[in-house]
Image (cartoon, rainbow, N blue to C red; front, side, top):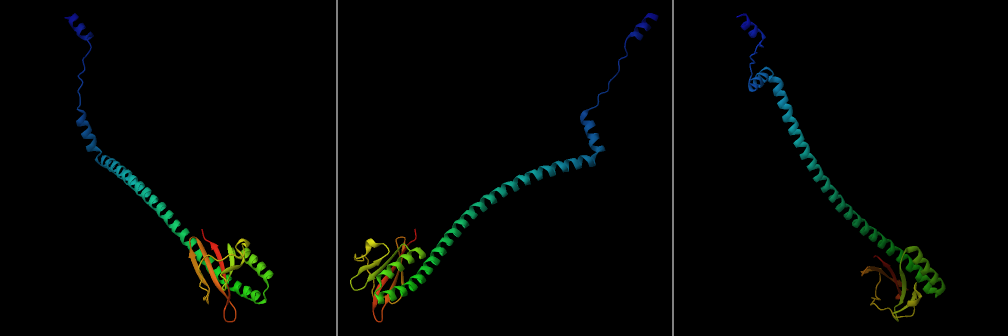
Length: 200
């Protein structure tokens, strides 16, 4: 018997390990920390919502940015076209006024029959006004009596002109603007002054 007891003493004691169910332990943890768990869930939901909203806002921002860039380009093109149109209109108005005043100088030189001064006046007018071509048409012969481009002088003016004009007239055709101004004597036209400018 003594030996049996010794054998039993020598045998290790077997411990009984009680296994706890992990689902039960998880539920107990949730019950004990319900407020913390709810706050963590709320935080996760808020983070997901915030991320979705951020992505939505970024897409909307990019869409609006593209729209504004396109709109800005269109507005810029319209503004440039409007500016060019106004600039051309102002240039024409200024040239019309300059041509009218210039016709008075041409009239006084024609009355004195001073062709040398007329040539100098025409060249100076072309330089200062930005006109491309200045011509004086004789109403009796329909010939170019004076031109800033000497190769035209003496030739017949190809286009039809109303020699009964009493006031300046502007004609726009094929990228050119012609300001036709009568140079009046006492009763009749001494000549027709044509100032031409290219707009294109």
